[in-house]
Image 1 (cartoon, rainbow, N blue to C red):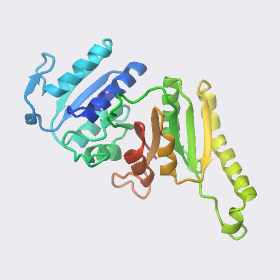
Image 2 (cartoon, rainbow, N blue to C red; image 1 turned 90 degrees about the horizontal axis):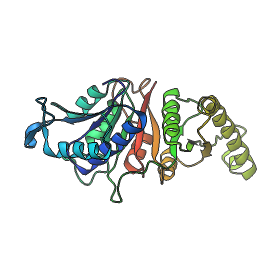
Image 3 (cartoon, rainbow, N blue to C red; image 1 turned 180 degrees about the vertical axis):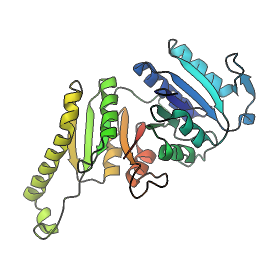
Image 4 (cartoon, helix red, strand yellow; image 1 turned 30 degrees about the vertical axis):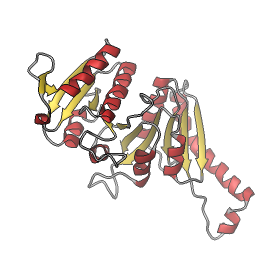
Length: 286
């Protein structure tokens, strides 16, 4: 399924929202869509999917039929994969694809904003994972800004590439946010950092560094309008606020270093996944 867009479906409302989002993404990018039902098929009455001997739950087929009606030219394949859903979805998506999941599945606890399968998938996948939450007012918008959280001291090419590609595909503005706590030290006490002129000077220097990080990507994607901002807010809070009206919020997940031996999502990613107002992409990087 290299380069395919893979979406996990189980008939729940969040998985329907994820499938619709994934279908629009596949249509926009010209990539095939794979709809994967993972887990125990005996929970549903199986129905033959396409005459090829594949059996799938009726709610999954209903989602597929809806998508093929709305986007008749889209290449859609449905499959049932037995076993643990998170592991099955990670295996199906590979390294070059895009994996889309609903925020909670049909077996999730309704009090949770993001279910355990979604979190485990985002923490383990080798490709970007997009988590989509079902909305009472209809599908997530595709017309807003793309928001990306960055650290210009340790910029990730994978995160930047994904964010710029998504903004270019949507003809959207890219909002690059960096959260920076202004330093105190032998010559910069907490009191001096609190002075407006010093605080503004330090923030301006951080913004210059962020702009320098973005410069080569602006050249590669000249059609993308970029807004850069350095904020003193905590990164998670800043990204959640920026996600209001956004079409996508992008965060990174480090796969090397202290936590490389086990699947791990950082505090910022957790905050954004649980509280963002838009779909959230988690991009693995070194």
